[in-house]
Image 1 (cartoon, one colour):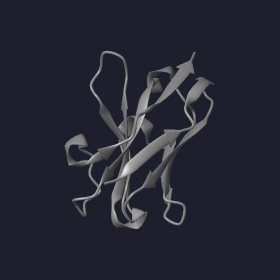
Image 2 (cartoon, helix red, strand yellow):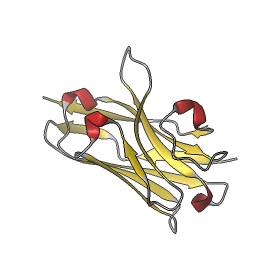
Image 3 (cartoon, one colour):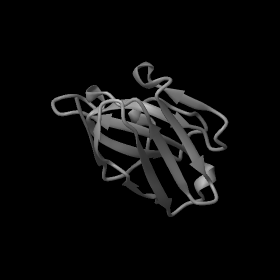
Length: 125
């Protein structure tokens, strides 16, 4: 079992920044890949970013490339999502997720086994 707790969401103005954190517990953190997903009202959950177990591989959806950065600190059992140059279209509930059963750094929500409760990010124009 893996427990995930997100924090760091809130309200930001367009062009501003927020940093999300996701604290993990229950299994050896460095043994599984992590991802961030988001869901806006009336829309399906979508992939945002993923990072491999070691942190060497990062993947991003096209709309956030150059603006968002995923990172992890295996000593602190935490994954981060630094969000810069925020846009109103980034408004959503953001979820972190753990992929414990595959060595791949997946962009598919179906590959992830454990999910956090989500944290709201609202970007005003």
